[in-house]
Image (cartoon, rainbow, N blue to C red; front, side, top):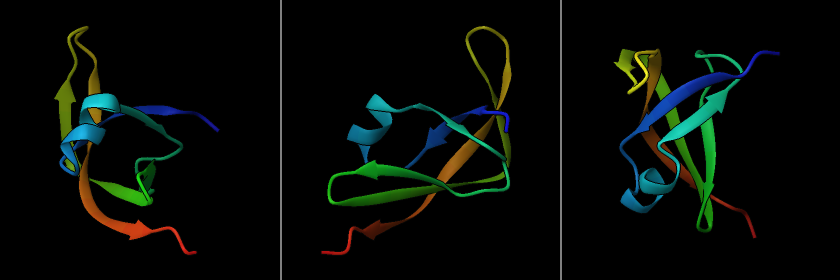
Length: 70
C-alpha cells in the first residue's frame, strides 16, 4: 500500500493548524483524523493544491464528525 500525501481543508481550526498535511492509502477513501472525543472526516472532491515545493497534492475537505462510543 502506498501512502499518498494530502492537504486537509476545513474542520476545527486547532486540528488544521496541527495536521494540515495527512497521508491516506487512496484518494477514494475518507480520511479519519482522531481529534478530541471523536473523529473528523475528510474526503477528496477533485481539488488539488500546489505545495511550497511545487508538488500537486489532493485536497481533502472536511465532511463530518463522529464521536467515540463510550
